Image (tube, rainbow, N blue to C red; front, side, top):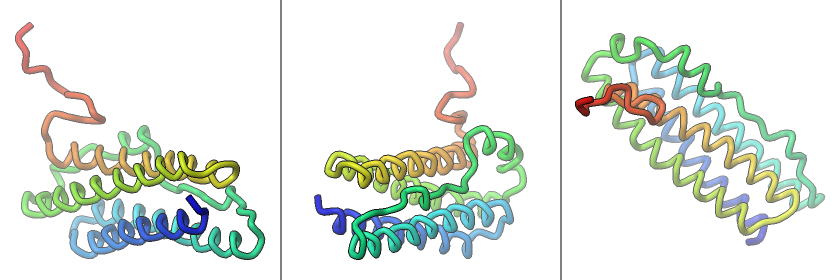
Length: 169
């Protein structure tokens, strides 16, 4: 896959998910929800900026400084520390809106991760290393959205594990 085509396609994925997060930030009234969507949108914007930079560099010099690709989002441990009390502070109506947005975001983040995995298979060298970093970053986004969705859904699943066992022991 030609590098410019891959970066252009990646840009479309990043723009789409950033737009969803900006829209969610406007829709959700909860301060914590707004902060989550703002952080995700800002991170996606940094990816967009990096992809624009990459396209310029590919056209001009053929080299990309991968160190410019950053991720400001917290890891699972930080999310776990701050997630307590989410559902108790959000009204049920708003919680429904939050779950709808999180479901959409989860689908989009998984699609974006799959695109980057495919890009890794189709590229090589320094370009491949950049897309490997994108896979790690997007997988973190999937984790964040899944954790928030599980907690907002109050379905007994937390961090991809059942919190309770309904089987008789």
